[in-house]
Amino acid sequence: MKEEITLLTREQAENLDVLKTKGKIAGLTDFYQVQNGFICCGTGTYWTKTPCAKKLVKVYYVDDSDSECWALFLPVHGVRPVISLSKIYENEEELRKVLESDIDIVEYGEYPQSVVDENLEKKLEELYQKVKLKRTKKSYTSMLNEEKEKYQEYIYQNNKYIRVKEASMYWEECEFINRRKAIRGKTYWLKVEPIKWLIDKNASIALSKNLLTCMPFSYKNDDDYEKSDIKVFLEDYFIKEIEPSKSIDTEKIDNLIDLMFETYVPEEKKAKQKVR
Image 1: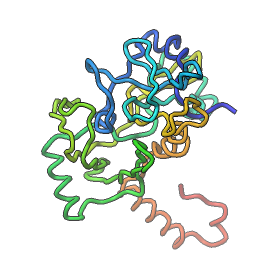
Image 2: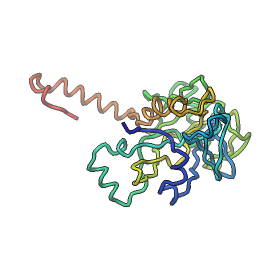
Image 3: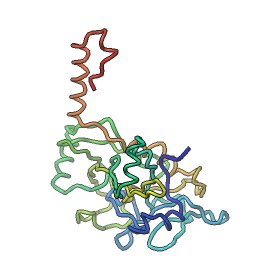
Image 4: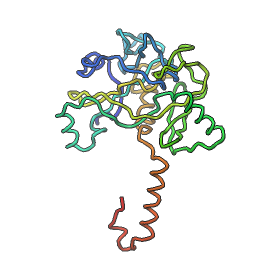
């Protein structure tokens, strides 16, 4: 059975058609940065699932050169997921049309990505402290260490956000995408946004355009991807958590429809009718 989600291999990082065209260096997200992601010359680094020689206990990662890491328990390299196109396009006819088209990027799922501006941050924090900020039914899992952390999703003016307390930037001070000064230990609000994926049609996969978060490869320093913690993160948490949560307004509409269905549809027709 083909994996729905995984990491690139070292060979794919070097040879995928889409990366030959667009370059193997991934874009950054602010969430990657506040999760301690390493940044050098404006770019980040990300894990592959390819181990080096077994005796070395190392795994290759991607930066502007061909590099390898032995400290697999350190949360400094990024997660750049690879997803099967058949997961994005579950309808075979729709998938065929995409493969025959000139489409090379697609939006699928959503994830915390960008730090908000200071005015919005002040408003969100004020509502949060007064316990007036509405929560959705969703949270996002961080695995920077063995103590997993959940970031609750909140909704404000029909946009979704998370709160990251005491951000742990790799560098003490740097800049976010919106040019805000990033300060280690500060609390930030990040907007949940659609994930952009680069399509490689020959491999029938898509890989995230940007580094979405960072985490250790393995808490136990094991270079076997099948036993890694990053595999657990992708398969048990990430692939489920990128499914968009419903807005408050959408939930109210759904509840109203359900109520109307129960009230006005005769019992004998309920089994045959679907309101939505």
